[in-house]
Amino acid sequence: MAKNAPAGDGQRIGAVRQRSQTQTPSGHYVKRDTETGRFMDVKTSTKEPFKGVRKEGK
Image 1 (cartoon, rainbow, N blue to C red):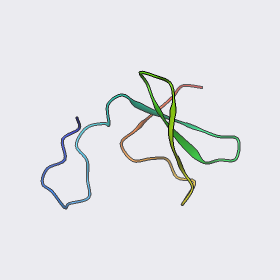
Image 2: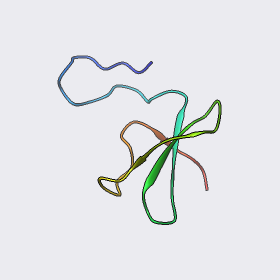
Image 3: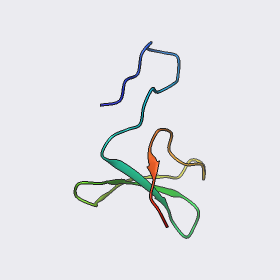
Image 4: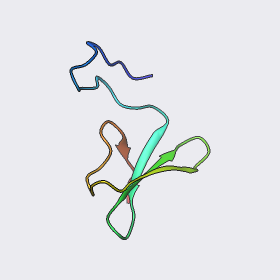
């Protein structure tokens, strides 16, 4: 689990574990569980990547 202290400062210390993200052809980012390979979430609010989640190699 990633550390996140002090609470309320809006910053994460360390990466989210067992997660990765990749970009779809439309430009949105998709979060994936690295153990099962299943897609978890699509970021549709903006085309910016998820914070604290590593990117998959191309």
